[in-house]
Image (tube, rainbow, N blue to C red; front, side, top):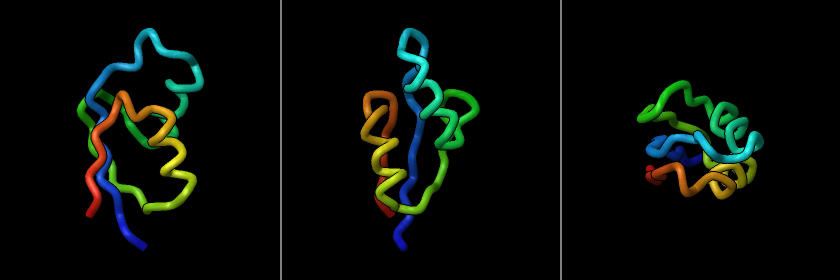
Length: 59
């Protein structure tokens, strides 16, 4: 399956608790972290929920 590279570029301060939990569920620890995930519907759903905080690159 394809991989996706995701970068966290905007702070989650001021956003709802469920959006903050989504950031942590994707595996981010601090701002400007980059993670690689499998391109699954579950991961795509999490990305869509917080797309205003992320940059996504398809590999």
